[in-house]
Amino acid sequence: MWIKREIAQELTRIAASFPVVVVVGPRQVGKTSVMERTFASYRYVSLDVSANAEMAETRPDDFLRQFPPPLILDEIQYAPAFFRQIKTFVDQNRPRNGLFILSGSQNFMLMKNVADSLAGRAAVIPFSGLSGLEWQAAHESADDTLWREFLWRGGFPRLWDDPDNPVPRDRWYQGYLATYLERDVRNLLQVGNLRDFERFLRACAARCSQTLNMSELGRDVGISATTARQWISVLQASNQIILLEPYYKSLGKRLAKSPKLYFTDTGLAAFLMGFQSAESLWNSSSAGALWENHVISQWQKWRDWHKPAASLWYWRDRGGNEVDLLIESDNRLTAIECKLAERPGWQDLRGIARLSDFYGAEAIAHSFIACTTKQPFDLASKVTAMDGWTTWELPSP
Image 1: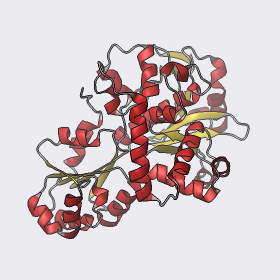
Image 2: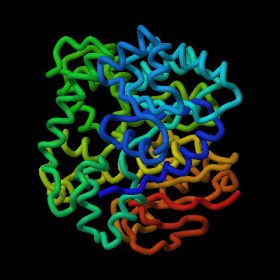
Image 3: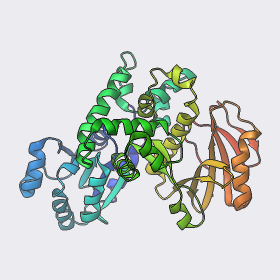
Image 4: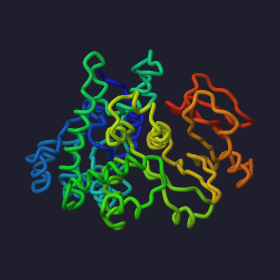
């Protein structure tokens, strides 16, 4: 079953404005499928095939004669030297746009080559698994039980291909994890013991939606804080986690405080945490953390796909009052608090109230509670409870 992706129309628009479009994201999120469907007239070449990568690296002129643009190049990180050839071709064919659609699953290696060779020539689009809006459009009759399944199963498209014969979720994640460790981790970082790195992954999942403490994380796994920091960078580079930075008006303070840790996909986090059913997850003490993770990841997709100029933060004062998400866009702040409840109450507004007192009510355009309500309702002036399974339209400036 093909699930229409939100980003398809945006990709077409961007390709009309840039000679190179770079789509980055984890493995198995549907990058290849959306590129082939969106750019059906383009040639497709995967550099995951060693012969193709070798030709692109060592005989770039022959490669382009055999595969002239417009061209989709998948897993481009396996031919880093070819970026210089792309740059030369683009410069020789200005002002043509939409020449190359590139994709990769190793963000660090890919972005280094983009920055070195394609600065000013490429638009970069982060891509990830199914959003709540995409999944909802394909499951119009989804009830609360099926939404809970989505939180547990996750947004990898393969897990929703055949509703009548679903892929065994645990087996799929077992294979995904093994492939990720063997291919991406070994390529990005020389980890001596992959079993230690897998334990590190599980320790990160246990800290889902928490402030990141490198020393504590390293101690629990038996590695140094320096190694923990390096391994966190691997998870970021391979698009497995989100680090949400704290908001302060002073940029220096923003950089001085610890981020919060989220997974790009709640299904992977739930698998690493050991949940074998949606019911066991939903009835556990971790349900609230995974709900918060889901909401944050949905707004991360919204920013990456529709509003790249927006900034996402969280806010916490010294007294421990916190707002889970601040969206900074058009010089306005929107506050979003995540609550796993159908009818949140006034007691859930403490963080939002403290934020408003701290910066002044005029600094906050509107506040929302992302909960499981079926219908929006107002909790207070400029505070609305919304269905947090999906994103929604923010108030206009």
